[in-house]
Amino acid sequence: MIEWNPALAVHIPVIDEQHRLLAERANLLLHALSTSSPELITNTFGYFEAFIQDHFRTEEELLVKSGKIDSPYAQKHMAAHETFLCEFRTFRESLSSPDMNPAQVDAFSRWILAWYQAHIEHDDIRLGEFLRSPE
Ligand SMILES: [Fe+2]
Image 1 (cartoon, rainbow, N blue to C red):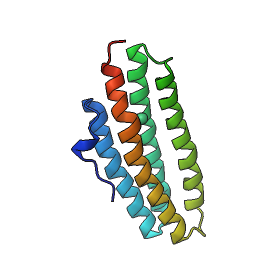
Image 2: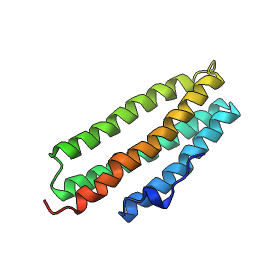
Image 3: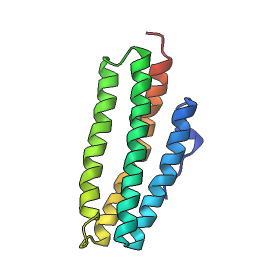
């Protein structure tokens, strides 16, 4: 179970709200995987991927608006989003196959939980500070 908590606050309301919803949607996805229903799994993966792409876009638009999109920090942050999507799609493919097994679901569940915590704590909280900093 993935949960947002105030220690993960980035202090940008739109981002904090999306992070909270992201936890809910990740839990829906983990639930779908536990049902082994191919249709539900496919739909929920599609729903989650669309949501997280929108979320990354929101963060990236804030970086564009800040005028600091070319900074090494912004470039590194966007590269982390790309890496996530690439790894996510690899999981999505193996977990959408009819012969997927519980060990793969377990691996995915550990991976997404660790990513959620680490990306928010290390990259997104820094994003809030970065956007508020004057230069
Ligand atoms: Fe991010």
